[in-house]
Image (cartoon, protein in one colour):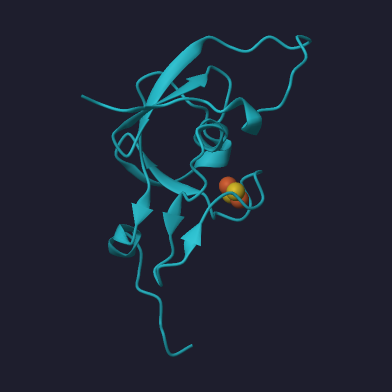
Length: 116
Ligand code: FES
């Protein structure tokens, strides 16, 4: 049995019927199904599902969306096996798998020099 995180409308913009949402799609975040809409970014879908921590820094600090426009790299996630993609500028797709990096990112990047 798998859980599904439902979009929480309190986190979504109220389009007021002026702009139609895309088709409903589903992606998996850490193995949990997350409903989203075509045209949303991965970050938007995750936040609408109540997921606000996208990764942890190499020192263990939680990280999530900061700039939302692809500049700060705080929203890095693994998508369909490809590490270090910015969730805020990657469109969600039906069947996509997203994994949050909980310390595993350190294996993909050089270790931080704790002395500096
Ligand atoms: S939130 Fe800054 S790059 Fe994604």
